[in-house]
Image (tube, rainbow, N blue to C red; front, side, top):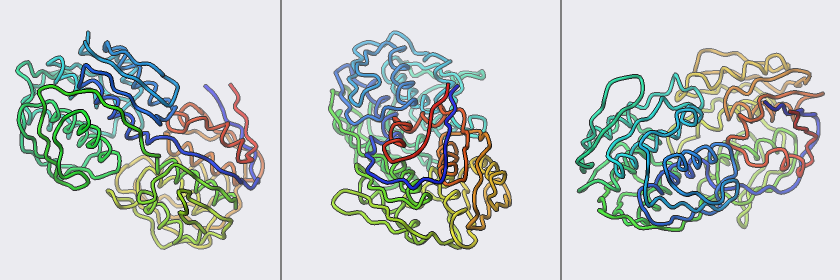
Length: 419
């Protein structure tokens, strides 16, 4: 386990480039199992979650070259197992995305309960309902046992929840199913769009991309493809908050302008000087101000993955802000640790927190990064605090942020990784 020592009070400045979207990389890697031909993914984020998914593919019998780099080559002419390694599955919620490809290629799947952030609170019922609608049969037990020996069949379905990974599971299965599948109340996030476009490259017919109704015409044989991942707007938004909370000036490259609108809109409401110019998202020194409310929602609303970071930014904003994350029950609990740093917080319930600022944060504490996004937000708090802060385990944050320590150094942060 590693700890990040953060010396606060330094204004960050410079340029940082974001890598590919983490939430696109995982379903795209799963999609590579749908074909026996080679698939090449470029601009892949060099993060822990991607490495775990790549090793899951290896465990199933695929060949994966380039692990740890930004280019992955995947070949899966034969799969020798239908049961991914349960230890790796227990580390990654995205492992659920393997169910559709395994049913399509092998006719059965045996998946241990997926891990990741808040595993006990995040159901995969939407995924299972989609697969059952396409003809899969479910066994009993605590593990997820599915069989489709006669192949998957196209179906018409309404997703009870517009789950991102639930929509992706349905898409992956439908791409190799016999006939046409219609998915209504589908998620519309940019990473879902990216998966749809990749499935088109593989040879599946996908229409309605970017809407809540997707139609997929399955292909009997899917081909290989090459795809460059788009920049991660969540990572870009994280660096924008790091710049704003330290009074810094940061240029962020690699993100898509349309996707950064959801981030920039809230930053501008908080009086943060920012703009997208010539492919660069610029953050200038600002005096943040509170907004009445920040509420998460389904795309294109404000993303839950950024709510922790914006809560920390609200501690440095003038006035009172209500942060409402109705999507996840436990995400805001980790931020209670900020009270010990001097933040004025009131946790109203599992979904709402009231922040009054600005407050002068104090370091000198050990903060527990209980999930990926809260971990990054606690690092941001440490960068704004007086004195030294310890955030651990750093590995939790490195699941989603590539070369974090090196990039913080490049921006002028005083941080050190201690094993």
